[in-house]
Image (cartoon, rainbow, N blue to C red; front, side, top):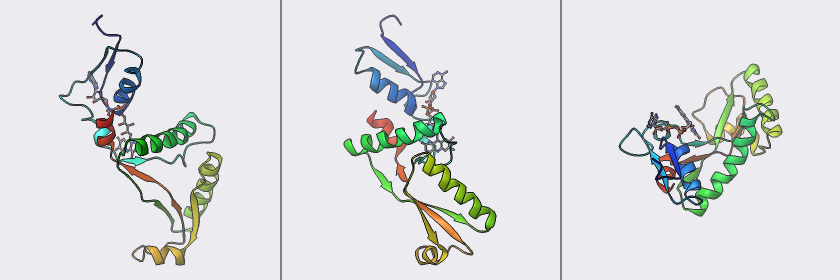
Length: 155
Ligand SMILES: Cc1cc2nc3c(=O)[nH]c(=O)nc-3n(C[C@H](O)[C@H](O)[C@H](O)COP(=O)(O)OP(=O)(O)OC[C@H]3O[C@@H](n4cnc5c(N)ncnc54)[C@H](O)[C@@H]3O)c2cc1C
């Protein structure tokens, strides 16, 4: 083991990213995993969404890292032609409680420096999504889907 500068245990997306970074600094980086190939656990079984950072409490580390990390990830994907789609997400309110929740979400998002939420009326919603029933209002959020298995390969 003393033949390596760094040994990283776990070749999920986190271990792979660490290995990619450290291999610029060290010549002998060893990444090991209990599986035969990298990214065979959580990193290949998630929802493949780039989180926007709208739910985390203001000033929390999660909120800060999510918003910063999202921007870095967009840049990384664009620079390396990693496939991703900007599809957006609907947050739908069905009643007053939901509407209050969405208003609070807009407040939290804005405090977290996320400003791509768009308030729309039920008429606008039905124009776009006629199959969605009895919705009052909703936010449309720019959100991207990413092939995590591809980013694992790029790392
Ligand atoms: C249902 C679900 C949905 C998710 N959706 C999203 C999403 O949409 N967007 C998003 O950004 N994040 C999402 N996440 C979170 C994201 O998938 C994880 O944060 C990320 O994959 C964690 O990567 P990791 O490298 O830390 O862990 P892992 O991918 O689990 O990698 C850990 C690696 O360590 C290896 N290992 C463990 N123990 C040992 C050992 N003793 N010896 C050797 N190797 C070992 C494992 O084999 C594995 O390959 C989701 C998570 C879940 C569970």
